[in-house]
Length: 311
Image (tube, helix red, strand yellow):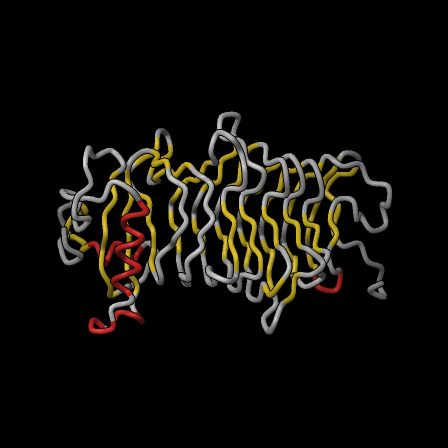
């Protein structure tokens, strides 16, 4: 299978190459190499086609990372793509691939257009610019955090149209923990289940350019926690357009560095300070706009609550 192969005919009138399909779906023209992963094969292959796929995502990531680094091919400024099927593949990722898109396809049970990955992932190799599309993540049965990201290794990592599931069989403490990672993006994703800690957590260090946008975030604790030691230099971070259903604080930004706007959410917390609603959302009110919240004893309240002087 080559990127130039025409695969789809629409009403007998047109066909599209893999490359064109990727561009229509927002993946862009990567100009790099395609790799293939099928978790159902009996033995791993060359990884260069669906007829001879790798059996694990780790193999494909290692191959893509090595290929990007070959100076003779001048691929350091290109992007590779890994296509993944297999219902759910079980492995803990410890290494990602520089400038590589990982795209789930096929179906994972009733989740069309996705591939599943079960494990707790702590990448410890320098691989910036990694993007995940259409992947469903589940934690191991023994719990733990699904993704633990460090700025030492993972700048520019992105998750698009992914699902993070913490159900009874694959409990998790957090969906994503990000420490000093610049340009983290989480867009159009779903976080569902009994996350026992905050669903998304920012730790100490520079989180410049972080964007948490248009997600559904459900959890048994806080929605998003930002440590007081989180910094932004030079770009600000955004928490925008998300829907929350949590038992604790919807957004708890102790750094006061994020712009928080156009979010809606429910918290099970009862408020004791109706004038500020800090038990439901706690952010920098000068950087917060047009959020609406309901909680244990309030309904559809605008946050932040301000008088005409802006105090």
